[in-house]
View 1 (cartoon, rainbow, N blue to C red):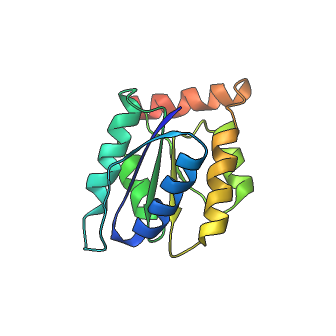
View 2: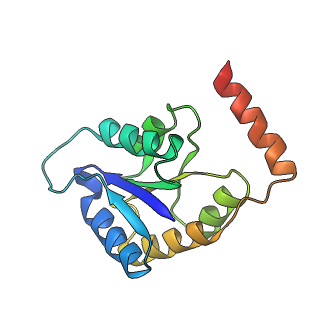
Length: 146
């Protein structure tokens, strides 16, 4: 599996912890930054991660900011992206199984590192259930085309 991860200044520490965790699990990670606490504009990072996912350069993406909300709003502007803000393991599993989310958004100021790593693991281990969920996903795809 190849995953692209990005963050703004509000999610840098969490992003760094996730990168380390994923490397320990032998998951290939493309880290697009940011690499400092200097203020940056989160939409640029959301766009780059989203484009890597929709182009197939990466299978999945993770975005971190202060709350995860801004990143998800920006990433979801890219056709084909289903970015979900998650702060618990139940939602992490459900968003993969039911919505086939392809970008996970996390808020460093909302959840701690330990919970974030559990969420990442849960999200990566879950798989899309298809069936009735595919029918609903097709409706979302139709919304993008309008």
